[in-house]
Length: 322
Image 1 (cartoon, one colour):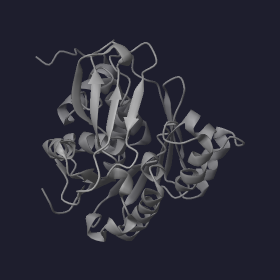
Image 2: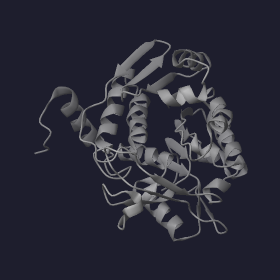
Image 3: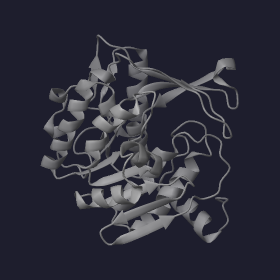
Image 4: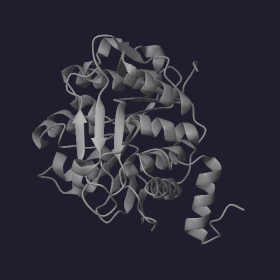
C-alpha cells in the first residue's frame, strides 16, 4: 500500500511475547507471539475504522522485524517508509496478563533498531496530505536521536498542515521522572491534541495543579486537552467548554492497551467532526472492547463493531449480533 495517508504515526513496534493468561511471568512456560507498540496500536485501530494509516519507524533485518512489518501490513497499515536496519535488532517486550493484579513487563530494547531513528531519515513526503500525526512520549525517550526525530516530526506535521496528537504514555522503566519532564514536558506545549493521564500531568508538572496545567496547554494552542482520570473516567477540555465520560463497565481480561484504544476512538471521532461528548463516548467504548481481549489489538473494532458497542453501552440494546 502506498500513496497519501490520512493518519501517520511514528514509534517503536516490537515483538510481544504474552504469557498464558493468569500465570505470573516468572512461572509462565507458554507464550503467544504478536507485536506491541503504542503508535502501531493506534494506527491499527484507526485503519480498522476505515482510515488510511501509515507507520514510520525502524526494525532490524531479522525474523522479528519481518514479522512486525508483516503484521502491520496485515492490519492495513502502510509501511512503505519503514526503515530496515541490517546492523541492529528488533526490540522485544515480554509480559504476563492478569485483570486483578499488577502486570510484569520486561523490555529488551536498548540499542534496538527503533532507538536509532534519526531526524534525517524522516522524509517530508511521508506526511504529505496527512490530517493527523500521532506520537507518544516513548519515542523521544528512547535515545537522543529519537528525541531529535520527534521534534522533526512536529515540524513536518506543521508544514503538511496536519494536526499533532500527543500522548505522554509514561513508562518509568524507560527513564526516571526528571528525564520525562525534560524530554516530554515541552512536547505537550506543541501538540494540537493532548491525551494524558491525570497522573502523567502530575508527574510532568509536579508543582502545578492539573487544572492549571490544562488551562496552560489550551492557552499554548491545543485544540483539546483530554485527561484520563484515576477513576477511569475521562474529560475533554476545549476553549468552548468541558465534557466528562464515565468508563463503561465490562469484564476485564487484560487492561494493557486501553489507553491506545481510547486514543483510537477519540481521534476517530475528532477527525469526523463529532462533538467532544461523542468522541469521548467512542473512546470509552473502544477501550472497553479492547480490555475484554488478550493483547493490545485483538479487541479493536471495525466500524460496525464500534457502532454496535455504542448502542449496547448507551442504549442497553441486545448485545448479540444475530
